[in-house]
Image 1 (cartoon, one colour):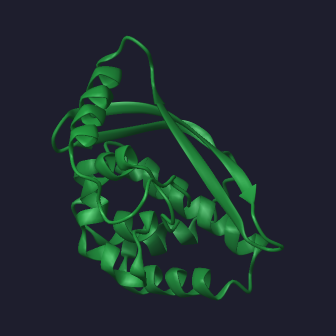
Image 2: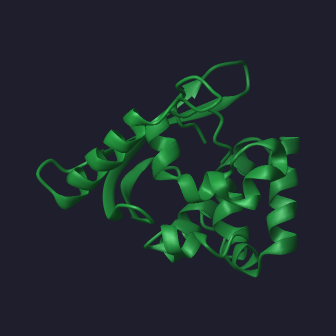
Length: 169
């Protein structure tokens, strides 16, 4: 669930996660860490409960696929220690492989967004698998207008420290 690469629009869309103290842990933003350890995540994720279930189910699937992954074991331990919500979801034993759906966000600057997403596996080494996630808004909707507004603000701001990146988790 580490965000290892992203573009400027993803950064703007998930600004509360990037600005969170949880992004300082582990050296990079992590969706699961933000979701379970930052109380503000409930403001960003409209369907916080569904996001929590999906996130833990994806992590459980990865833990089954790579039981010796040290970084995964460390974040699982951290979340289990610090979040009762994570422990509750982990105990449910849900596993999720599906990589598409709808994400509903309430962005602090542009308001509510409903975005379709699809993740694709990118096997880049002998063992590592990365996901490339693409978000889209339905044409002609308020979500599309709000996403375009956010994109226009992003385009007019000076570049941050990193080159253009893509989301992966």
